[in-house]
Image (cartoon, rainbow, N blue to C red; front, side, top):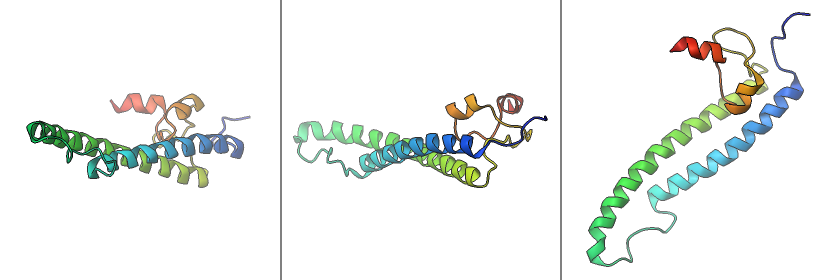
Length: 125
């Protein structure tokens, strides 16, 4: 029997569970970052004394910039996870886009949105 060219529905369901868990956590984190940017979490400087206000505002600006960068990264991660779910539905999940071979289960468990096998990823560098 030849090398298998796609994962079984049972295996795809296992990966779908992993991705859905990571997606829920990623969306939760994204909301947290978004709230910290818009100060929806109530941690602002409106109730501090004027002496510390200038220092607090500088730190808050820096913190907002960092939260903005983290939110962007999180949003990109969410998009990659959602794309992986689409590949599962299309039954193309786990197939390396460079080699056409299956990406190892270990790699997909660690990086469930991976589209390259370890070998293809190494060749990219």
